[in-house]
Length: 186
Image (cartoon, rainbow, N blue to C red; front, side, top):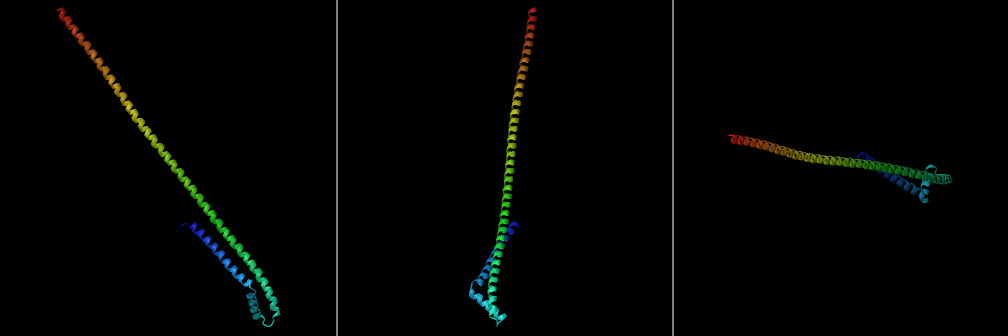
């Protein structure tokens, strides 16, 4: 597993945890502020513990606590929502960027590999074709050369044989003629 995958997974887990944390704390603050009975009991118990004799002051404190709690809760909710949204957006953006980068890298690598493979295949094919052509040409050239040599040799042999035969025939004819002439002269 690559370290990039671990980082992406960790970021997603962190974003989900942040959203879950914020939604849990958001709901608990809403539960305290939503009911007037719960609020009143808390205000009474707080008011009794700080000043048991003064009930008028505690009423004023309760309304101040309620409005302060509500505005603080709203502010905290907004802040938590913004933080969760930003965290989720950042995590999603990073994940998308990494995914796009990986996809682009893989695509470029595959394209380069294919191009190199095709080029090597073409080069090998051309080399094999040239080698085969040269071999065929050499074979044909050698065969033609041998045929021409044989033909020339045969022609030369025949010509020499004819010439020798003619010369022998002439010589024989002359010799016979001389012999015949000598015998007739005697």
